[in-house]
Length: 340
Image (tube, rainbow, N blue to C red):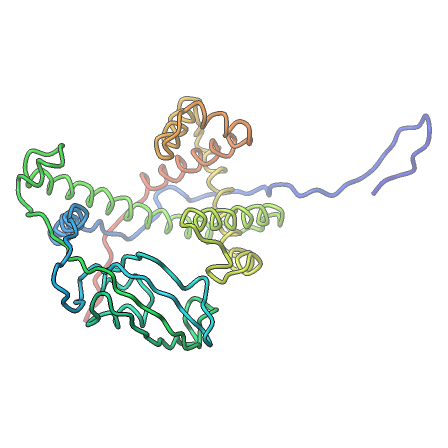
């Protein structure tokens, strides 16, 4: 609201700005929670071993021209046609399909079973209205197929020699113990994450307050940006998953508001409990980022400083420490068994 601007006289004006709300947080220590840390199951360790065994398998070409079976790896050329016209997004050359794995085009993959090499085939697939790729949803598409080669997977034996060949373990038991340790660590992280979610739910329920719209908007933008980056990491875009940026912004509004409220509560608790973040802690976190992204520490530092990301990183560490304190002080008991 500007006033009159006159030469030689003070200029006065008023402005409306959004500020962080003044909040009061009480009763946050000793929160009562229910949770149980799950034990490691032997089949979970065995699955890790099987996954590693699969990773070290090799493919062997089947010399005889037998029909394709489930579990085979097939090298093929294919081209999709709609109303007689080829679809640019529906073709591949020397494409490898693991038959039965469910990772190829649904409706087409299962029809590969029984085909033989070097014969050209035509397979029609009807896609439902709910099919994920909207350009093909509700349509009948003809696929021209040529099987070029069939391979089978040869698995290595799970024994001490297998473990030793990895170059780190002295025996199969040592490898299994390592997997058991990894599974236990993951279960603990999941368990603690669930408890932290319950802590935040309780805090938000006990301390309701409104937040400035600008903070919610900023968090929505962050969530949308994170989603786009995750998709880009998989070589995909929002268009390819048939989601608009506007739809994401709408979907993320409520979660963003909840996150902003949680951030403000945790920052308030950190202040009340005298929690601070040292330069060494920031340095350690930057080292973790460097290791995770396979970059040099100095390059990561320059990036964070150039983009003014250090304050945000520091605030994130502060909130983590506050939440860890609340978990440490919480009263956790196993869930009560419900009567059958």
